[in-house]
Image (cartoon, rainbow, N blue to C red):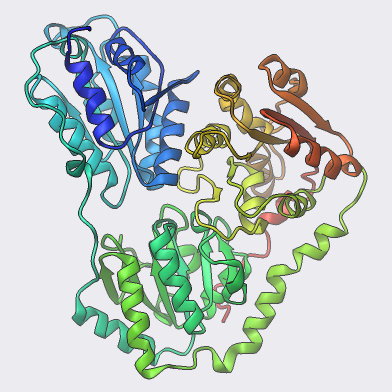
Length: 563
């Protein structure tokens, strides 16, 4: 049996933390940890094709499970390549532990091959960055980084470990037990402040619930659904809160908001005299867009953490604690004086509800020949997919259509990047979503991107095929960066720097061992979608998309005086 060293302490620490997957790319500074992982019976090592994608996959694990996803990379460019993935994770509330190798301790004070100041490089994109310098610090650093990543607001943490230390047999502090990786539970908020919030709720006429990115866990969703079952609270979701309202509560659901203030949900927010935010983070949707006239309403902030105050987000009451417990407490106290919310505005709510679903008639009547209308694709995908299918959406025009119109009724079953709007997340997130299934890769996962976003991370097709994933990835292909294009046209009357093309995605898919399909005409769309979704393994569907109306996505912004 090989002599135990610090690499074994690292792996045992991850095991005690409940880690099942490690995503990474090997290198001389961390090959000792890769070697130790080879012998581990329960932790699965996923070798990626780029460190950024390892960070993306780790972030998806964090988002889907609530347990930090782990990525493992070498020094220098290996660490530098993590930056975008970790920045996305931290700004969007996904818990990640990044383990990075560094040069040996005796080389740390001078220029040497693949040296990099990890603290400076990663400090701005992580909640914490720790440089280990002695053996006794390893287990402590990993345990604390793991906990910090899990504590709200969740995000990325990093631990940098010198290569000579990884090989060291001077094992000091052993790995911490499982309970030390847990974080404290969150109880309810201050009772006095709850009383003040209750007073404001009872005196309001038109309260609305705005669910943000930190509302997407089972406990909070259950509490909010019970509240909306008992009382007439219209509910609006941000994009990352998708799925918080179940199908049997659709009469309370008024859509999702984000990017442009032109959605039915924006109208409901504009008419509210009180907005109850749950897990809201301005990273997703700036308050100045949805709360144009802050003097017209009261805001009650419910979250794990205090509000990020601004001129347009200045809550009158902050209920800091476990959102599920806080919402449930408010619900129970509201029963003592059950108000009749929105009683004098039901007609206006019904008008908004009809507007919310009006797109479906348009989708069904979309042209059945020529390039595919985006809204028709969204309609068919919802029609064809089981409710429990996880769908990962890349950034671009595709994500605006999907997040507005693809309805899902389970939290974390429609994934998007709405903080950094990071191109390329679609496929890596789908791979991670497939791998965390029990058993791994047992159910189909769907991912969608534009042709531009797909090329950011398309090399991970190799990873998906190699690991036996069951993924169908749809590419909306217009040979351009369309989300940039239509916004440039709105600003300048023309576009620049957006032309792409030159890729045969069917052959590209086949080169990686996936199955490729192509849709050139809308009349073929449904049949090809059905075939691809039934195809085992990894399949790619290249769809000629019609973006001629995409500029309409930013039109009809609601006037500031709308009431």
